[in-house]
Length: 93
Image (cartoon, rainbow, N blue to C red; front, side, top):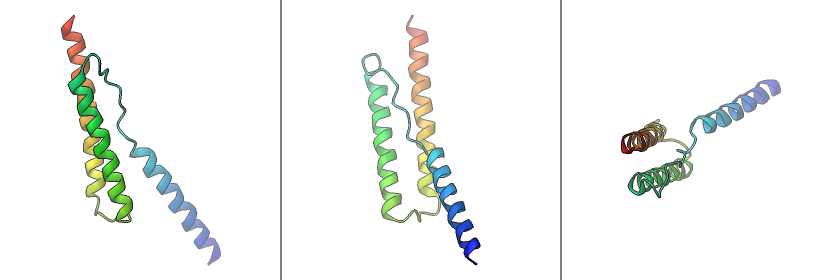
């Protein structure tokens, strides 16, 4: 019985750490001097990610996966913002 509890605790900790590693905040790497609007959008994306994390913690992570999905979508938004900045850099010559 004790081994089962220890195993469950270790597994739970591993899942928590793994989940945190997968749900990283979007990287802020758009140059605000060159692309102020895209950088501002990226900053707002980061703030939204932080608020979702706070909501998850306040609700003991019980949001039926919707908060996790929203964080994944914010990661996609961040990727698109970076792609937009890269495209603007390429096309500006």
